[in-house]
Length: 190
Image (tube, rainbow, N blue to C red):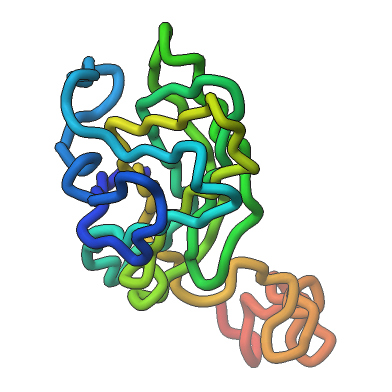
């Protein structure tokens, strides 16, 4: 298995209080520390149930099969957490972001199991954060985010060879009803 790291490279929506992708695409990878004093993406009291989306970088998957996308997020919350989701050949099932309270900001990860050999699926990768109903004193801060894409060499051809041209493979042990081992002699010739 091989991995590729993709950062946000464009806002797909711009709804949260601060939302610029440049605030979270700094190339920092876990477990490295993030400068918490730097700019961050923020959802606050007026961002009820809003989707903040980012387009992600891409790479060539020719001859490869993507098996998993893990979203790494560094940040924290005051009282309520957000959801995270990805668009990869359709929206996946949203997951709790599970950010800690701001006094202990940290890296968290969310894993999405996917499977594709199609270039347009990775080219169209979107990242979505959804804020809950925000209370007056709530805040969601995200300082860094990236996608860790796991892929492998794609398998060519069928992986289940229980049948070949509609014939059970165990039946192919014989030719015209004769065991292959009995065909060692042909017309009496070894």
